[in-house]
Amino acid sequence: MIVLTTLCVAGAAITAALAMGFVGWPAFAVSGATGLIVGVPGGIWLARRIKKDDPAWNQRRDEPRPLRDA
Image (cartoon, rainbow, N blue to C red):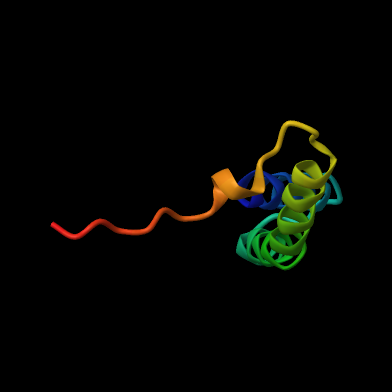
């Protein structure tokens, strides 16, 4: 979910920058940074909200399994 949110935010930012006439590497760098700064917390929040609102979500199933001795 984090990757999807980050890429959506960065894509919207670069589309807006290109539409305003900003062409060049700074536009892509700022858009990428904006995607990371806004997208990572947004993706974490979105994933938690989806899990909280889903009645079929099982928190115990999401926990890591203990390692067995070989």
